[in-house]
Amino acid sequence: MQNTHFSFQIKKGSIEDAVSVSNQIPELENPHQKEVYENRMTGKKYLILIAYADKKMVGFKVGYDKFQDGINFYTWMGGVLPDFRQKGIADALAKKQETWITQNGFQNVILKTRNKHQGMLIFALKNNFKIIKFEPRENIEEHRIILKKILEVEI
Image 1 (cartoon, helix red, strand yellow):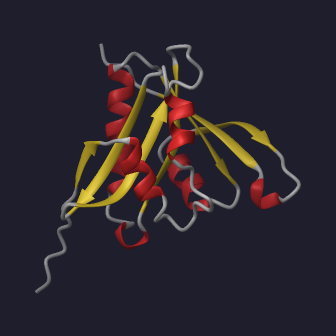
Image 2 (spheres, rainbow, N blue to C red; image 1 turned 120 degrees about the vertical axis):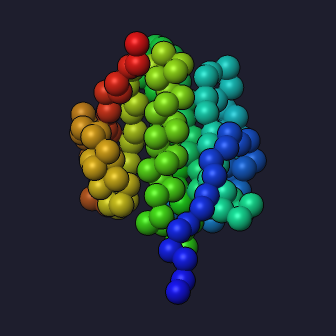
């Protein structure tokens, strides 16, 4: 009988780790390189999480204080390698990020996705994000959808 239990760990990572994993996510055409991450996050609070299975990096989640208002945290990039999807990794990354967000005083998490990334949109809606803005583009697949989740702040 095959063991159906799947084991993975989540740890803080580096920009290089995030770039390495993002380069392996097929949905991310032209993934951002190190300089883009540095430009977005320098001087801001940020968090990079990496998921590992058997010491291999299999997923990532990156967010930062884009709005610099101390209230809204922007979850910017993330993904899980195709062979490791549907194993709870994306959920675990999101939960760990949300815990860090609330511990650092933020009240909301905001994300932006595109129409063509239906998996991400479904994931966000299932995880209590609400659509707050829509940015149309010429190509319907490129329409941007901005979502927000109000977090439970622990007292």
